[in-house]
Amino acid sequence: MSTPRIPRETRPAGTESTRGGAPAGLEPLAVLPVFVPLQGKRAVLAGSNGGAPWKVKLLAAAGAHVDVYAPEPSDELRAVPGEIVAGSVTLHERQWHADDLAGSAFCIGAMEDEDDCIAFVAAARATGAIVNAVDRPHLCDVKFGAIVNRSPMVVGISTEGAAPVFGQTVRARIEGMLPRGFKAWIGAARDWREEVTSRFHGFSDRRAFWERFTDRAFAEPDRVPTDRDLAELLGQTEAAPKGGAVTLVGAGPGDAELLTLKALRALRNADVILYDDLVAPEILDYARREARTMLVGKTGHGPSCRQDDINALMVQLAKSGKQVVRLKSGDPLVFGRAGEEIDACRAAGILVSVVPGVSAAQGAAASLCVSLTHRDAARRLQYVTGHDRRGALPEDLNWGALADPSVTTVVYMPKKTLGVLLERAIAEGLAPATPALLVFNATRPNQQVVEGTAQDLATRVEAAGLDGPALLMVGDALRRGDAEAAIAAIEPDKLAI
Ligand code: SAH
Image (cartoon, rainbow, N blue to C red):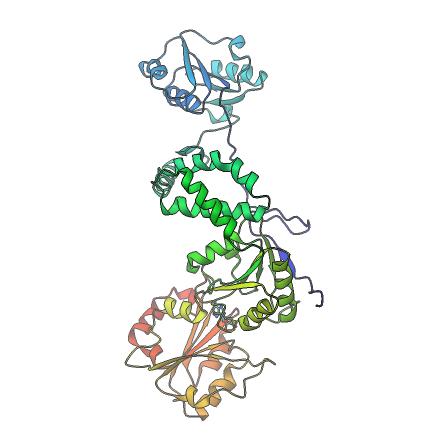
């Protein structure tokens, strides 16, 4: 087997590049979220302003032993020691002293007086504690966010003061998304971790166990997990076939929301993702952060990989035990050379499966709101390639089928041969006035449509001078009033003509 040419390698957004050179792609963070373990540690809160009682409860809930120094505690603050269920709270009804802060891991200033607070913050910093001051962001080392508590899983949310109400709404939504029963499942994960780790030595087996575990938690969030779950999940993981595999995954035409749930799962499970250059970059954001992503584009622009190299690389990675996702635009089985990739895997004895995707034709039809098989206009739907192996108009197209008045034709890769293809179809009997569209960048924010007829579309496309992947759609089904209305309803900047 020849050594595959090394494809360009990139990392999904938010991942550090391990090769140097390429930027890490991490967007700016307003704050760094970190999580502070306080179990059994000492914390101090001084003062008794309005925010004090809640902060004391939070510190205690995190397992801290909290000393509160407040010469004149509010009734609410006085009640706190009786309300807590974790950690401890001791109320000292006096002014704080610098000595009080020794050995504390976390200090909060909650006094009304700014100078007193400044002095407190300075004394707290001198002890090496983490410091927060209620309602005084300028004095804080760290700030509190909104919380969704499914301990041991904790979600923290911050808008860095930009939009507190927005943050609260996000918090409420996340509350709704995470069933309360997750608490028990995540607790079980913590209790079972050691056993799972000792049972499975390989990373992929462990991951397979935890994926099964997570599926079960999502399927039955409100059932308390038992030792029987543990035994079943261990057994299933042991019985599952081992080794690498290849999954051909349809990425859809661009809009990431068109990914299937199965595609998402495959992306999350992948060790390596080999993707085509027509795959929209945001789709790769759904990969695991640790996954290797490799561009193996072969659309003929710039350096590209030969199909044989891609096949060899795919097989080699799977043989070394990797879960390989071959991510292809649209549906993998539509003009994607999937047949060759499947054959290569089978020939090498590699397990191969396919996750379908939304093909560009379906994406384009949906965004135009046209029925491709409207019963008044079309009896048949056909997908045709505008290219042969050399990039020329295929000699062996069925011209009778292209001229059929009751067909809707979608031509993939139509750009180079658009003029000759339509001319020949007309010569073979296609009515020159048949509606024809060229849809660029279907389902993407920069989608554009050039409208015309079989007769004049090529000229219109040339005049429009647009760029990007495009589909030709021809047929009476595209003439329908609703289709025209839909096209008219597309935002003007998406309409070239
Ligand atoms: N498997 C893909 C097709 C791959 S062939 C699918 O099912 O959609 C590549 C061709 O697909 C491109 O030349 C173009 O004709 C079409 N295509 C892919 N994505 C597209 C998009 N977002 N908009 C328009 N055409 C697209």
